[in-house]
Length: 270
Image (cartoon, rainbow, N blue to C red; front, side, top):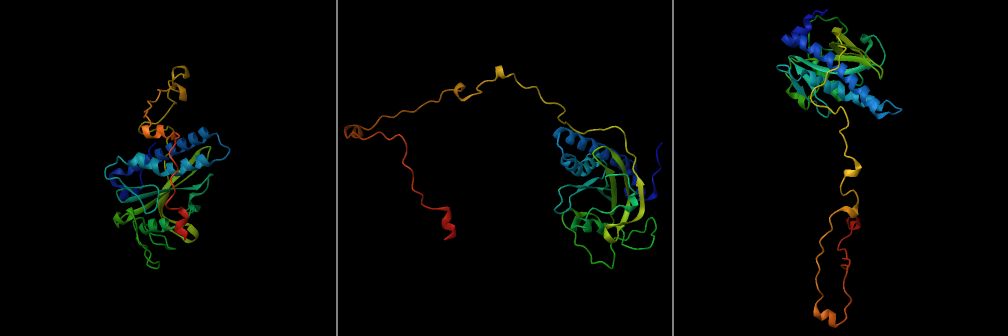
């Protein structure tokens, strides 16, 4: 059963709202599958492989799913390793808020870095009052305005930051939500619209070609030149000694005399 879209999603994403919601759910399902596969392949006692794959996947799989939508644009913030997707007037920022099932309304932004402060320049102003669905103020007048950098400088000012918090662990993808919020005290979120649950599909999809098996290897018996004495013999260039050297019984020179260094790496310190 298809869940109706809320007015705020149509206001921000327009005709692409259905596709954006479905794409986000599929992106998280693929992210989880990739991260679990990475963990399995490493056969490690730590969860580092899962965490690393999940971290990159939460941005790259979203890019996979949404890049083909009309008007979708990747935005690369200054100093950030990944691109965020801008669709319509919504700039999407996915983040892990819990490794267990927890109330998303208690979610906190992982850090209050410069990146986060720049992203929240596109969020509603911090306030203790409940705002209307479309009451989006871009900056809190009580806070010093943030100077945007990198790809965020080209983002239209009417854009709104859409937070996409999700919960997962090495065993399963638990849940995902989206909504618009102001950044409150101690990294807490003051939700203005949402957070609403994202439908998560059961099936995993992939884009492009990926290595699914190890290519067949040649039998060692048919490999050629596997050791140094099986290769082609080098051609030697011989030259005779001058007559003067032979008459004077000069010892043949088999190696060039070492050159005396004209400079030393220690010279830079003197």
